[in-house]
Image 1: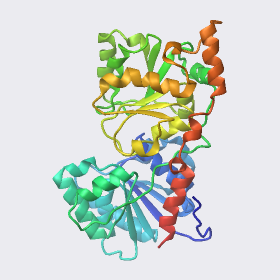
Image 2: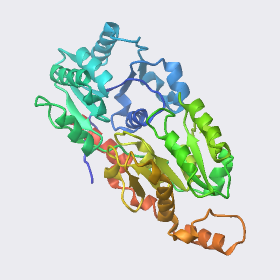
Image 3: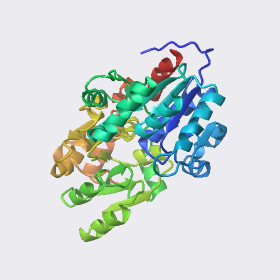
Image 4: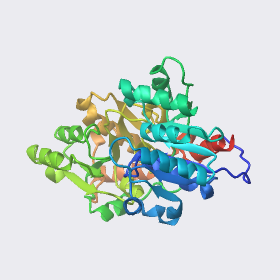
Length: 396
């Protein structure tokens, strides 16, 4: 879909985010901040961070650091933060505030109160928090106070959002998150594995997510015990559950089959190294990791939560219920077959040996290279996402 926007139009947009830790929501905001038509005049405010920490986590932002403001907000309610935001809105002659999630929505709405000419757009990245009455009330209060326009990153999020209120808030429009298809591309699996020192002759199932409760790492480790003996897990990311999960690996005697990479900067190479990507989250909005894996020609296993069913097809993903941990090992095999189109009896890792079956698998992999990537929907591409947001920004 082509979106025409006046390229000479100047719009000053203030992006407001809670923090810039490494995560999908944060990556989406950074992609928009650096790729928007209005990027030159766009300001990015992080409520909780200091700039040094942000640039350490996101070195690609170094070139844009003059447009990044970190407020280092203390815990709890902060009147100072409201005043800081109000000063930024006024001194920078902001035309549009674009906030993300409930904290930035609340603070930006209070700071913008009285600035009648400054539009406020809020992107709802998931709606689970609205199950808590006080947070639903806070969202509605902020919306009414600031005349906020809502955008949801998935149809299901928009539906959950509007059903949480009994009037007073307009139905959000939907703009799916998008992945940079020029950066996330298919690549050489063996070369990618060499970079991370991963085994060449195993079937690698990978996960990229914060290592926290609810992301499903523990389920992946438990189900590895029931999977094909050649399967290994590869985990990218860090978090507070790392020690507990490593202890679980030792308890189940699979520590030699689980590879912990920690923080990974070259994510395209991570996806390229895998045979299957798996996200067994209990809740999501619209995770970029699923789109990134597909763009890198890697089939996916994911839970049927949030907006995931909206951006995948049977040709690139095996969906399972969030409670169906026991289905994981079979789903991994099914996803593997999406890429290589081999039957169950032929389900083996690509091997450097000269066995007849390994040659068969290798030939089919070469024949079907790109079969997953070509299923990436237009609505899951970064250029489409940015163009859709720019259209909203231009309409002032």
